[in-house]
Image (cartoon, rainbow, N blue to C red; front, side, top):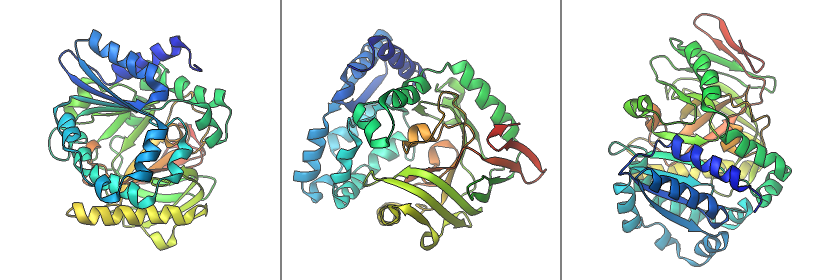
Length: 384
C-alpha cells in the first residue's frame, strides 16, 4: 500500500464532504480494485451519514478482456439494470478506474466508441439533460504505473493528486471567489500566453462557477451538481457560437486511445473548431479521429451537433498543483493556466449536449483581459 491509511481517510472525507452526502441518499461508488480501500472508506462514511452506498470495482485485467473479447454490438447497448440504478441514485462517485492508464491504449477505437454510445442515456441522467441531474464527483488516485505513464516520479503524482485533493476548502474558496468576482459583469475576454495562445470568447450573461471542492446548497440551487477532486478552478460556459482565435496546449490526452498528445494548436471561429487547421506534434491523427468519432455519435443522438463548439472556459487556481503532465484532472487546476473545453456544457450553464467534453490547458503564463474595459485580471499567470 503506497498511500497511507491517514491519507486515504482524509481523501475519503474530502470526497464525501465534497459530494454533500446526506441521510437517506443512494450513492453509487465506482473505481478500480487498486483503490478498493478508498472505495470502502467512502462507503463506510456514507453509511455513517445514513446514506446507502453501492460499490462497483473492476480490475484493469477485466476491463481489457471486455474490450478484447466482447462484440461491439453488445458494448453499444445500454445496460438496463445499470441505467435503472443510476436513475434511482442521488449521488454518483467515480475514483480513477485504471491502475495503469496504458491498458486503455490497447482498447479498439470502435469498441470505445460503442461504449461511448451506450453511455449516452447514463450521461443524460447524471448531467441533468433529461431531468434534475445527480450530484457527482470524479476523483483522481495515484499509482506507480500512472506516474510512469505520465513521466513523473510517483511522489510527484501523489503530491499533485492527494496534495491537491486535501487543500482546505477555505483556501480554494479564497482563490475562486477572487477570480469569480473579477469575471462577474464581463462580456468579452481576450486571452493570450507566451506559447501562441490568442483568442476571444464571450461570457456575458453566463453563470460563473466556483470549483472549491464542495457541492454546496447554492450549487445545488443553480444546478451545478458536479465536483472534481482535486478541485480549484473558476469555470464558465461561454457563448457556444461566438469566439475565435488560437489555443496552444502543451500536453493533453486522447479521449479514445488514452495516448498522450503534445504541442496542440487549436484554431476556431464562430465558437467552432476548424478541424482541418488543428494540429499536434505528437498523435495528431488520434486527436482528430476522436473528434470525428464523437461527431458521428452526436449526429445519431442529438438534435444539434455541438461536438466541436466551445463549451468551457476555465482558470486554474489550486496552489498544490504546479505543473501539467497530461492528466487533465490536475492539469486544468494549474495556477496561471486557462483551459478551453469543447462539446458538452449543459450541466453548468451552457446549451450544448454532446458525448464529448475535452479540455485543452494552456501554458501557465496566461494573460486575461476584459476586452470591454481593458482591465487585465491575470497577467502572465498572476492574478491581479
